Image 1 (cartoon, rainbow, N blue to C red):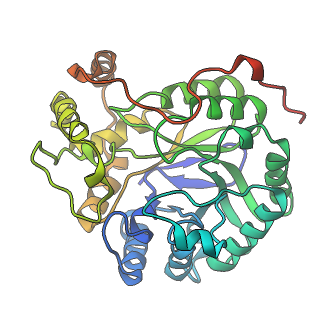
Image 2: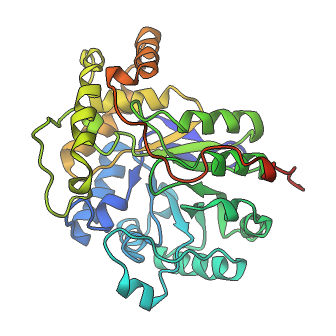
Length: 352
């Protein structure tokens, strides 16, 4: 396993991390706490994975409790990343929540501090390595008090690095662009980015390069919800409790067509490994968060870090394929969030 640093901090992380969404929410199949804890420990002990990405909203604190149990007594060996921003403490909202619908978001400074203290309590630690605000919207980006609270938490030693996660679906371009323009000392952004879903992630990276010198990216949905694992066919049927079952059939059919154009990447490694190497070719990607939900995937994806890089010819071929949407004609993708600059809301210079 190779490691990368968060610039300007003491944090070093494995190029492949473990996202706890798949282990704690039940949206990728049922996993017991014992199974989740065992996978976390094997990730570190067998593969050198040190970056573990949790959130208070994952199982209403479950991912953080699992993490604490997995590494009790080994805190210095791992990097805890977690997220706040949803009111998981509103019992009425939790009761009426349906499926994967979002809980109410709360990011006033007092609530942020309350949420961080609860995270620390569940994690059994006195500091969080990386704190991100979970699925923030444009009003949050434009509220300076939110970001000043993050800096205060750093000064107090409760967190070491801070940033934002954008989602839950792909999009949020100008939320990310404005954030790096306004808060130039931001440490990290979590975004969706992969070979067959390059926009708007590429534009987010370009904005960070231009405005936020120390902003690195931790990338989720690295395999386009499993498409880039190279195992789906037009006849694939997802289990009842799998969130991909509810996507339109065109997502599956078109995705399989795109993936077939990438067969040239599988001569030296699996397609799933090549998908990670493509991401890691970008220096601002500090770690990748493939969805790992079984031992076979853990072994395959963790091994990607030590494999040889994709060649310049392979990278250029991918770029050319991307220009033609991998040879597939389809309806334009539907993005969430702000995808065009709102001229009335030009960015302001950060006051720090």
